[in-house]
Image (cartoon, rainbow, N blue to C red; front, side):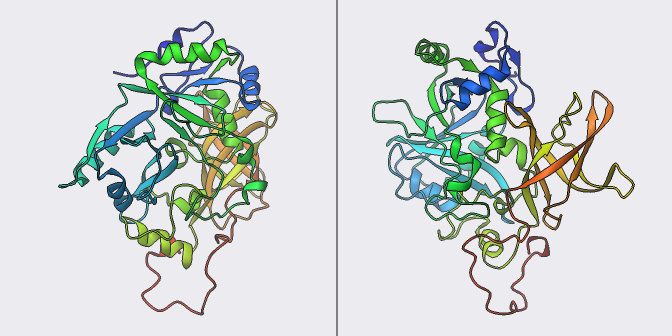
Length: 383
């Protein structure tokens, strides 16, 4: 049965679609909602997200050994992020991580939670861990707050983006120059039965309830990748500048680690994330999944070079989106986003704002010591 938040019964609520189905897209005034969220005074129903709980004394050392993040000494109420990668280094799962001293909580997309819990259960062997898909019992509330949960507060995951966390690296700009630095964000986990009362308490303190139109617009502005949007079956973390928060470069062996290290040290990601400023002169906007093309010589759309992964109407920037392009697309080229809306073809011009540079090199890539030794290149698609 599909999920539907009780807050969708609020007056003016318009249901979201896609990976945000089940909660409100907005409550009647998306521009005002977005402004309230950007000012740091709003509450967001994020109860459609998935939550996996991992208990047991071996939980942190075990998660450390099988995921991309350094978790051996994760302190209570300290947030981080991890990937489960395929043997080829492709992103299979992404989750926010926080430990409460008794259990580790993984916050992910609702559709991914059952598969993540099942994979973890297959990997536990004889270790003292207990995995539970807790989505039906726990719900997330979003807040524009740049702080970890304090002692005595509910379990809280704080999004460190765009900071480069311990052991991470970056392809894009430093934190002080990154647009995501202006986006505080955390998720507070509450019993699902308490969702309405917890939201009401924040409303009583002066915070309006806002929808995912606002959260997605600010996420796109912050160049913040999302599993349900920017990731496909070929994605490696480097393409999305996601080594900032979810990968520890110097950590020991884990599934997919060889690809992470090889691309960071020797190669270049085959694709790169960009933010697109979309032409807003037309009433309609292309939808996620639309093709991104080079302009044709005679006008219109030419060769396909990528995919529009997210799209939003920002209250100040206008229509914006995230897209994943082939790495060799010139950075100064104007693009055309070509798709369909309500069965009708739609083409929109778009200007790039660079997230991952076209040279495909991180800021701490080791210096080259000459040609690679034969046999060291690995898969050509990753170099």
